[in-house]
Image (cartoon, rainbow, N blue to C red):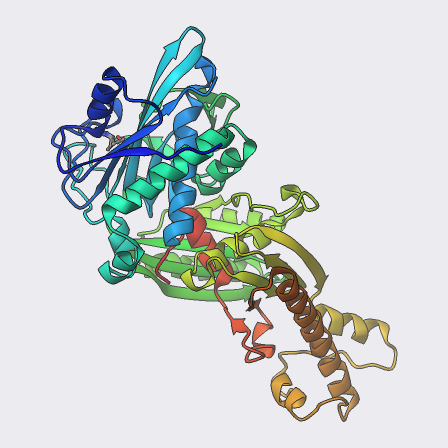
Length: 532
Ligand code: BTN
């Protein structure tokens, strides 16, 4: 059942929510929306003012209670936050970060706020007034209003006004948001989809929060985010055990948000089975730049690894006190965590957000952190948005994941990595040599040249082994991409990443993307950068 949404557009008002209440008192039929170009008395959470200049979006949407019980009201703002995040992601390609209960952030800066007011009749909600403010053209200075809260705006996150202009104007954008929310509400808001979207966009589990105004960096004593409970409460890990908080005014600040009001260095670590990569990215309002990249084998002894991390810390002049890692190798993670701690760096083990699954065949628990992070990385790139994707990551194992144009995971494969295959042939085949894909004296021309030449047979045993291994992976990926193309009727972009991925680069328009996992880490920590 759908009905047209009555929408009132105002040039100026004190507050769209106040206006909505007047309309309710006048008996206007539900649902309806009030949208204003500016507000002179906009209000926000905890009785704060919401600065509302012309150029940003102000919406109050009034929806019927839909038979919901009063005790469900704490869930409503979370549902709205998840729905707004999904809307921004789908429409603009921006993956915001949610902060419980309903802050909408990007890179630690606020891009929007939600204020829900519910009215009850007996044990049921009679209606809800959903107030949403989005910073579209202007990042208001909230220093006075909200204790130094840094802000940003959608225009700054996109490629400038041109690309916004192509999308829409402020009024129609807010009207579209209102009609989408009202539609989802009518179709039954209380399904599990919003819950997984909330988790997907929320600050990742395990990230630290610090007492507001006291500490500036995460140290012992910070609270770690654990997720939301069944009635929308927040769950935390503290030094005194698990704690639950129900009020948004908890006096805690996301540790990263403390530093996000000025340019900062983001330390990221990718711990693979055989190698570890460390990157430092400089994050500023203008974007993210890689300022340091080091890669080393996991067999490097501690007395060499320690100085390497030390040099990195020193080169940053002590600016680094925390870093984020994702890894499939717990012993190496423990080693590195201890070494980082010696240099005053808290290495936070990032728990990637859930990936949306197209079917229930694969469950979240089955999918490794590295794969989830890769998918985040791909989806943080504007050019891969709403595309059919096949993501190939080549390391000790080769993983292949298909993502549909709705950003859901369709399925995947795990194969022995190329070098792993070569090693095992060398070990098990009495007559066969152990070969290295990256040997300096590798006499092979690139696989592309080999295939171009017809390349059915290779001359030497070495060539037969290496080309055979590469070619079988090529054929596997090709056949998966073809199958997806057939099933979806859309072109498929193949992205290859990882240690040996350049061996397959240049093929059939596949894109070699060396930093996909690191991009995923950045996207999980800060939000997905719509602009790269
Ligand atoms: C927050 O403090 O984060 C919530 C801000 C909510 C602002 C919106 S703008 C539209 C509606 N009208 C208001 O006066 N407040 C809400």
